[in-house]
Image (cartoon, rainbow, N blue to C red; front, side, top):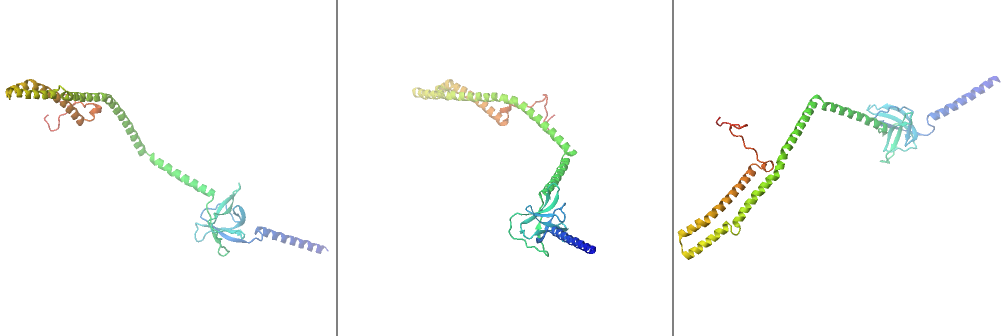
Length: 315
């Protein structure tokens, strides 16, 4: 009886152990749900991803990572073999990303579909379909940080070159030249100030000369002026010639005594005015700046300070 009891206990233990192994194997293999293989191809590091890691499609767990290996044909690529429930239909627009779960940082494969294609991927154990892996947000942030650090280093190197000893000397000379130019501008402004103040006087003098010339011409053309006097003298000469006859001597005396002095005086006034206007025009033609700055001082003569004998001349 005791032997039979031991045999029954051993049989029950074996049965329970078999059931436990069966349920354990079922749990480890994901139950009886059929799964299809896919190769997720990554050109980026997949640090933290391990076999048996979860595979999620739009946040829902749909499979497990089976193996991780390098592509024997191109070692720049990493082949992640995943098993996905056959009820999930992946298309050609499906892509994978490396995801991280919570604060633990456990990595998993996250599948997404951008909707650009509705063609279903055909896969099998002999020829698994390939799914491209894109960099995740963390990977993009890491790469952007690396690029930023590279740019900062390049900028620092360029600043070091720009602020080298030779460039510092060049900057110093540039600042000195700018300071000298500022001083020259101030001196030029100081020199222009008297000329600007004298400009109204020059304009007034010009206006007075033009007024005088206008007055002289007005006098000559006005009634009773030189031109009118010439006309009246001619009339008198005609009348005298009619009354007295053609006496050349009396006509000459009349012209010499009456007309010629007045014509001479008018001619002198006109000549003086013309010379003044001509002198002003020549001055403005030779030195236009004199209208603003005034006349330039005359060149020093022999014996005066600053005199320089012309080259090739007598010394």
